Image (cartoon, rainbow, N blue to C red):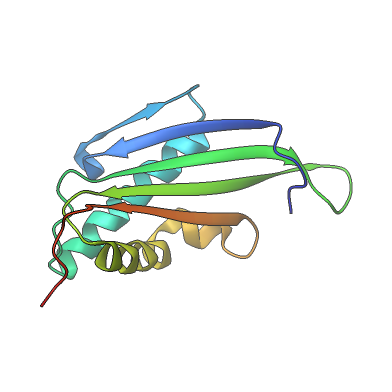
Length: 127
């Protein structure tokens, strides 16, 4: 695990496969993860018939020394905004996308990934 983050890059993806990615510094891992995760999110949302319109995924990738010897590692925080879903449904959707996303699967059990979900404050929960 990373003991202290020395540098953080951030990238935000919108629009899925046909969308775009904005990056704080051109860091390709952050941009790739954000884009891949957002695409996975949209696929899962469509499959579950959930409204993910206007959503975005931001990957914050931290770099720092590891606690088990020389070398560096990364940490990731994925922040997902889902303005058309209530908090509970948004969190379930993000957890499902995390299971589907190829980047998430590639680094699972090797990189600490934190999921942050921002849903609509006024979205109605399902009846």
